[in-house]
Structures are given as C-alpha cells and as structure tokens.
Length: 308
Ligand code: CP
Ligand code: NVA
Image (cartoon, rainbow, N blue to C red):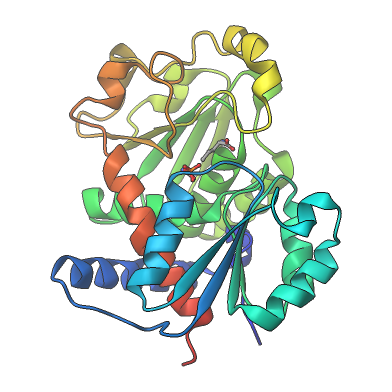
C-alpha cells in the first residue's frame, strides 16, 4: 500500500526515528561526496499555492541528488488554480509522476489529494501543519543536543501551523513543550488533545500559556515563527499590536538554560517575533535547520518513493 506524509500525528515514533536516522546518513554521505541515486528515473510533482524558498529549493535539489527529477507546478499555472478538481488533478498526476509534494491552504485538500492519488503525497505546509519542517527541526535538535527525549522545547508567538506540528512532534519523541501565545492566537486545540494522549504515553508534558516567561523557563530549545503567516497579510497591523510582549529578546533568552538553542523555520522578521541579536546570536541554529530540510526530505522521499 502506498504511504503519504500528511500529518505527524499519523506516523509512529519508530517511523520518525527511521527518517531521522536515514537523514543523518544521507547528510554524512552527501558531505563526503558519496552519490546516492536511490530515486533514479523518478519524478516528483511539486504543487505550490503559496510562496516558498526553502521548501522548493530543498525538494528540487534533494530530488536531483537522489538521481530523480522535480517539476515545479505553481497552482497559478496549472488548471487546479482555475477550478479543476483535486480528484482529477490527483488522477492525472498519478499517471505521470511518482510522488506529489503540495503546499496549500486547506489541510483537507492535501488529504483529498492523497486519497485520490495512486502515488505518495507529501504535505509541504498547510494552514494547519508543516510536517517536513518539524522532521528537519527534530534532526537539528538531535544534532545539537545528542537526543530528544526529556528535553524541554518552548514556542513563543502565534499558535499556527508550526506550533501545531511542533506539539505533535515533541509528543511523539517524548519532549516537553510549552507554548506561549496571546489568548486569541492559541494553537489548534483538537491537535493538542490528540497529541496529549501521545505525550502521556511517552511521559512528556504539553503546556499552553499566555506568559512567555513561564514557557521559556529552563528550556533547552526556544522556537518562534512569524506573527503573520501566508494568507494573513491583511491582519498585519492588528497582529503586530496583539503580539506586543511576545518578541524573543536577549533578556528573555536568559531564562532558558544557558546552552539553549534558538530555532525558527524561517522566513524570520527581525525585531518582531525575535530580536536581531537573538536571531544572529551564538545560540541560533537557524541555518542548520534550513539545511536539514534537504536531508530530512530526502529521507522522506526515499522512504515513500523508492521501490524497495
Ligand atoms: N520554512 C519554510 O517552509 O520555508 P519556505 O516558506 O521558504 O519554504
Ligand atoms: N507559519 C508560516 C510558516 C512559513 C514556513 C506560514 O504559514 O506562513
């Protein structure tokens, strides 16, 4: 049966570690100049209904490094953007390509695309989730902290697709996570409920608060994301007002563990969700994180698209 990557809640802890281990191996080989053409002759169709730098480049380069080919399909250019159904798009693409990556608005469109496709579908960000980013984040944390279980992550800012997925990922690997967002910008509570069950099984905690100082206390990993996600541009002025007090400053960072790392999925807006001195400071691992998108996604594509 074909497998997809739609939602981290649907995959097991073992599967997450399989991806992370393979990603580490592919990264090491890549640095040594070892070629690994595991997906020779395969094609990935990449549907984008939103902008992207990292996701587009890392999937395209990743596919190239694996011996395959990636096709950039802007939803403005394909018929999906003019009203062709997700069903027909899934059926047609299944006749041409070996896997589909999609970045769009509604999680349901990604789920439907997977339901109607005969080939693996990878969620490359929806308004609800961003699983590829969190796999790369877990890989990055493991590189810097030599493990995941028992660590404390804190997320400060908008309760968005990143927050939802970080909560799922943390629960799966037994990491505590504390999220501080203004009351009306909290993360998805259905996702938290499902993740709480996983966290209970793995003896980890999920805390939601409105106080950044409470969330960051003794954290090993500090994470934030933009206050204005793609599609929310018209709310910019209001959001900047509402998020006052949620900027990660050097002073706030002092409440975390002294060896804590600072993370951000990027793009970052210095002086809003985080101060420039934090983003560009010695605790920041943001560019390792960006690089690891390549290695983690190569591992995902190998797991989902290779013949063995
Ligand atoms: N972090 C991330 O997904 O970046 P892009 O929007 O540039 O793809
Ligand atoms: N929350 C952001 C993440 C970008 C990678 C957005 O959805 O725009």
